[in-house]
Image (cartoon, rainbow, N blue to C red; front, side):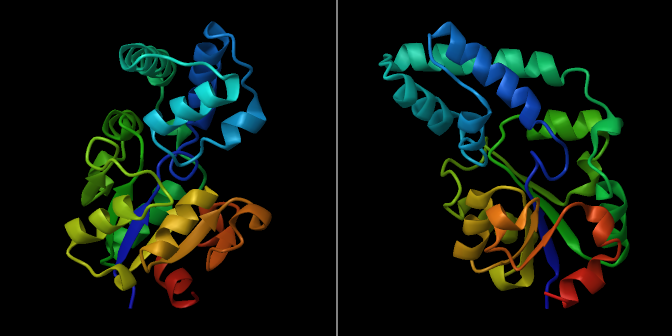
Length: 216
């Protein structure tokens, strides 16, 4: 029986992907590297370090460790500028209601995200208190599809992996959930997230958490 829910952040709770795109593209252009939406899709669900490495590889650009740290810090500064004006209006459809219903039904809730800015984002949108545990890029180092972030989330909830369901919008995140022995509901398109146990377009499709989980 599923007793814990683990949520990715970007693309599941809020759409911060657009802000990551702006910041990564600004950095890539500064280094003379082409970076469009196709490249951005390949960064979903992975860490900042791995994202930088992929962009540098695409542009065949070599940097020293110090230069890499500089550009990661600069990218994060630009990203923080973008998200500084976020508010509750940026919560994706149905999410707040679903979290409230899950809490009322006695389910435990954790965040499992590669983002190092998860806590300030949740504070800005007013959802920090909705989570019993936060596992983000400041806690784990392995990128999805490695299941580390979700396994740590389950551990912090005091639950076994098979008692947890993950909500993900990225293929790497779905693979991480499956690798961790968890159920998974994909948020997005079935052609990308087809390995998930169920795929929905938004949380408005599953207003009752318990019923949605029993159907998996």
